[in-house]
Length: 207
Image (cartoon, rainbow, N blue to C red):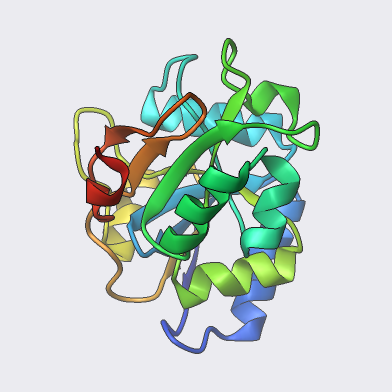
């Protein structure tokens, strides 16, 4: 049965954040609110939690897992960013975008796209996520909590608890969160390719 943490949406209680991060460090799986609906989160090198995310969402091997980063400096340790990409990503973060970029050697191999050697990265704008990342001290492996057969992320903490009570370890509820998934932009090739239109305006990445 998942632990249910009721967390303030603007000033997250340090005790609750510490409990959630302790679960991550112990190999657990979180369901947590973001500016783009709920997401599933795990520690970076936790292969078993990655497998649990895959099973919950029924993902295939081509799915891009995402690293949620605290800031642009942290993001730069895990993906290669040239000058043109730097400007595009910098102008869009923090916010509801996920960017697909070539991974550096800091990213565990099993998180990479098997052929492209890329990974998703994002910097969310949500106080609870920022508090989690500050306490954790490194990016969190994540995937938007879109259940099989659905096109939108889950947005209600209590419903998440009821649906996923036996497959996640902690559910964080901070009231209302974003209701649209991130806009996913692949910047790993010669130009920008919008793979999913979501909460972020895709116009700046479309010719």
